[in-house]
Image 1 (spheres, rainbow, N blue to C red):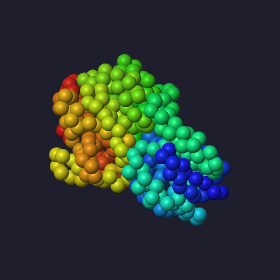
Image 2: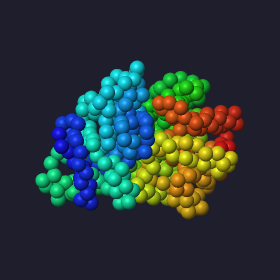
Image 3: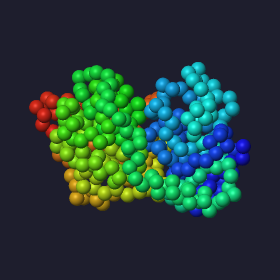
Image 4: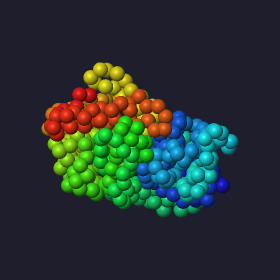
Length: 369
């Protein structure tokens, strides 16, 4: 079936619709990942977005449910150059298109994704609509713009869990404030002898402390951190009480709770190949990223935070730590799930912070990152 992508600025890209989802709108973003497409599709951080995959052939190995980032598809649509017709892998449960059809996610293929990505890089944040009919172009442009406006509110409420849940067992207890966490984060803690109490985003500091955690982890999630002031307040009330670690959206929350400021990137960082430099040892790590906001470096001067990691692409902040307290955060995903990650050791660092705090009788010292 003939299909189209209509951007809010009036640009139209034609292609082929691969299912019956003939109208879907969302914020347009692109990912440079060559692999992990199923992780992207099921990542809560992509909630409300139409993702353009820059790699030309997607779906080669099908999908495996045990490798999903969450329990369901989170994207609003997928734009591809080509979807493979004959996926093959010994662990494959289903092919990509069958899963997207089942999940009612619009898929547009045979699109010039190189040209589309150049538009998104130049124009910045744009809304888009996947459709099978462009007769009413003014209405489609308004719908595309409205899709971006709709994402300016609290998106975490749509992806956080509804109840407190316990995962695994271990010598350390971590309370995970779920802003849209991925399954791999919980498994990363469990593999390191830590039990996890995952709690809804609106759980306040008092309720978290009643669970008697050795440390508190603030997860990644979708949307702007400034729209979830209740999470910022919770984080602010936890500072100085327990060791804290955050990633992605949680990283931005820690910065805001400490008095720093946030700004929106022109087109975000999304992919599995982003180089990040450690300012202490000058080592460069290749990281997985998905975010549209970043910490304002100048605003850190009025806080007790310092920069630990920066992007090699644009020098934006990728890691921070507190000068005096056991608090640190990362803008990227360190869990490496599924697959190998060279930054998984940050979970070990968090374990060590909790161990040091326990051995010092609850005393809180700055992390040695």
